[in-house]
Image (cartoon, rainbow, N blue to C red; front, side, top):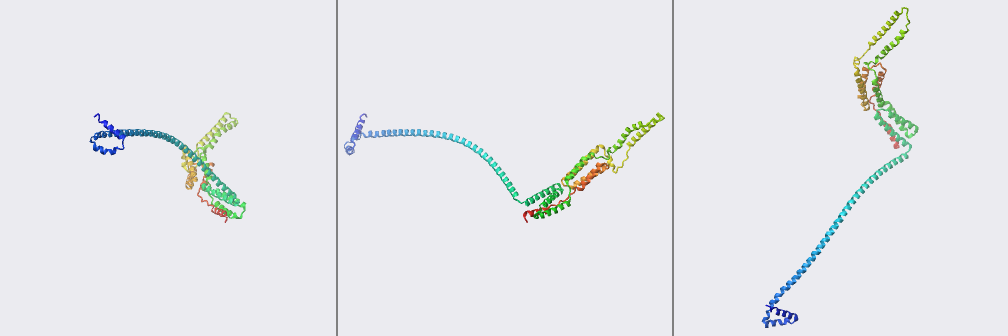
Length: 392
């Protein structure tokens, strides 16, 4: 077994030394020397070793390549991680910057909206001023007659509103009268038709009459203020003059007694004078205790002193209700309250007193004037003004 490798080495050396003639001698050697087949097992046994060496080299190369690829992959992964971290930081900073920019944009938009609103307000104000300026220029460009007609139309319409509110024809009458006087001063043929229409409406308004609610309410307020001072039939105010006369008598009587000269009888004359004075005083007191009065309505004397306050307050409420009814144009209600107030004055108050008579007269006048009157509209004047303004 130890000599077997020597021929194999020699054969390898021979094959290496002379590689060219080996193919030509191989068939002869194979035919002539049969024992030469002995080194074949050794040659067959050497091939797997080389394959194993080649495989080992290949495996080592592959392992080395795998290690290199793994190392490269790891480096790439680290580079990617670093890049991702860097990009994440950049994205965070960019997000913060974006939020800051968004806040700034929101603030800027708010400021822009405020400025826009201010500009719109100024534009609206400028437009209004421009409109007013145009109206002023147009009013300046109008002729004198057109200005007069415009003023008359506005004054008549305002007077109509005042008449509708107060229920009195005085504002309309005054306005139409002023319009007629103004047109008469101009003396223009174009405005003559308007002046005739104004005169016609003025005459119709004066003939319509009407009540001035302002004057009526003022009169009612005056009556309400006088209620507390009006004397009642059941009060003691009517007896004051008699009592005053009785109080004056004692003050005068001593002077009369003192002026009586002493008579010849002495104490007898003084006693007679004293008795006469005493009898007069007694008679005056007796007369002051008795009073005879004609009362047409007995219930007026049955009003107790503590009920007089409620009687006066009830009368005030009646008059105030009538005042409110007049202001609200409820003339039927006002007439009813005024009639009740007149009946209360006639029944419970002293009609012989001057203040009661004055209050009754004022109530009668208010009752006569508190009525619904249809105030005519100045349609002829308005139509004439419109026609003259149109230039027809």
